[in-house]
Image (cartoon, rainbow, N blue to C red; front, side):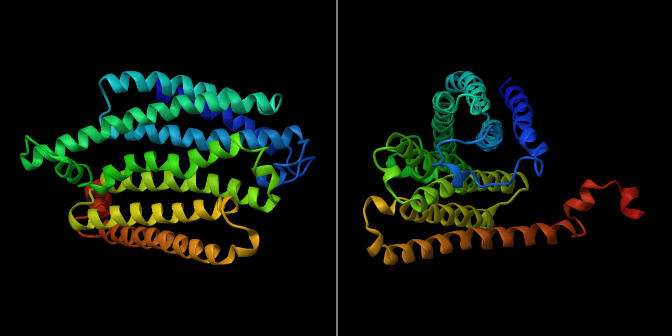
Length: 316
């Protein structure tokens, strides 16, 4: 049911973006949503695009959450709590995004309520998944009375499965937390900054959320294609550590005006950009090596291309 609701909301939300798209070049010009955030009056078509951007990224996250739930064989009491929250949270967020055009202010409060439901569902998956990883890891080593160190080693033994869940936790520190802070302190702090500083936060916020979703997809895909052994460890930790270092650096860069003046910011900017580039460079390098491996493996004599293709097609 959660998958069905997500798909149904996606189809409806596509229309919200298609309407302004149909007016493109005929009364509607392209714009960046971050550029109009401080404009007191926005057109209905601009609000439709803003609502569309919000909901489509959320629905991608919900879809991935459900896929990861199946990956971990999510069940039991936590599953029974999480799925209704996911269903109603998805419906609530979608309703809020659709109401951005006629009721911009109220719509955001509706989105906050739905987001809280979905975030709670993700928390329940993390609790279930962490306990499962620890239990499986201890069972593999035959440990019946485990200490804290044993449990931690069992938890992090597989960077792909651990990484997928950890990113859901880390997301709260890099995107959800700063986003909530920005919303709460918008008039008291954020709006007193230069527009450029607020725009940096807005741009970085959705970029990081998209990138975190991408890393979880990479973890899942690498597992599904059978990445094992040292390659699995190297790839998983490179993606996890590289991305998290980059996200932390970008967060500091975004919020730098809280603790440093504009005149003294350059050394901090230089260091945060360096760590962001190193982190993202590590992710891209790991992804490039992984894709080359898949491309070479695809054309091996016993590779997946030969296994998945009928014999008569190979002969032809």
